[in-house]
Image 1 (cartoon, rainbow, N blue to C red):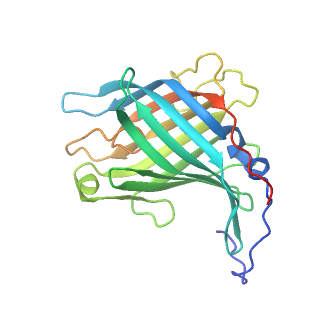
Image 2: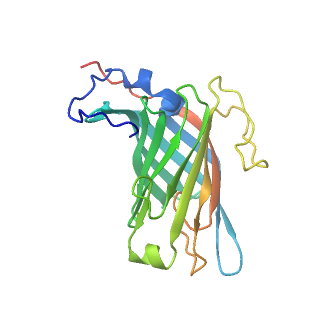
Image 3: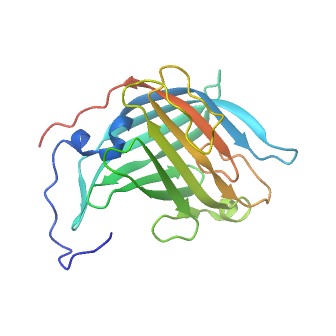
Amino acid sequence: MENIPKDIYTEPEPAVDTLANLGPLTGMAGIWVGTHGLDVNPKPNGPEKQAFIEHMELQPIDAQTNGPQLFYGLRYHTRIVKPDDVETFHDQVGYWLWEPATGTVIQTLSIPRGQAAMAVGRAEADARTFRLEAVRGSETNGIVSKPVLGICVRTKSYIITVAINVDGTPGGAVPPYGSQHAPEGRRAYAQSDGASGSDQTPEILGPGMSPNIQLNTDLSRQAAPARLAAR
C-alpha cells in the first residue's frame, strides 16, 4: 500500500453494497460461459492446440479491510472442460479485488496442482480494460509452486488482460492478440497473455498457469450476480 498512514489499526467504514463499489470489476460479476476457448500448449514436437469450454462464476463478497486498507471484491470459480468431455481440464479458484484508494486491481488464483499466484495491476474506477501481472520471486505479486512445477516446468510470469463491453456489443481484440476476434454478443473478454516458463520438459497444466502457453476465451453472461443484503 502506498503512503501507509501512521495509524495502521483504525479501519475504514466500508459500504455495504459491494456491487456498487467494484470499480473496474463491476462488469465481471455474474455467471459466465465461454464456448470458443483455445489452449496452446508446448509439446516436444511443437505446440498443441486444444479447444475448451469455460464456466466461470464471480460473486460479490463483503468488503475486506487490512487496517487502513479497504477492498471490494468477487469470489470466483473457473472450471474448464474439453468439448464433449465431462472431465475437468482445468479448475481454478480465487478472488478479484479492487482497492479504490490506490486504484489497485488484484487477482488471486490457486489450482489443484500445488500452484498459486497473485497478479496485480492498476486501473481507473471506470476502466473497461486492464492488465495484471504476477512474477516468480516477487513478495507482492508472486508465484509459488510445488517442487515438480517449480523445477521441471517453472512458471516465471503470468499476465492477464481483461476487457469489458458494458453495452453488450462486440468489441475488438485485446492486445497483443490482434487476430483474436470476439463473436457477436460478447459482453466480456478475459485473455491470459500466457505464462512464461522454462524449456525443460513442458507439460500441460491447463489454462491459467502453464509455461509458455497462450489461451483466450469469449464469455457470455448466463446469470446476474447475487446481491448481498445490507447488514
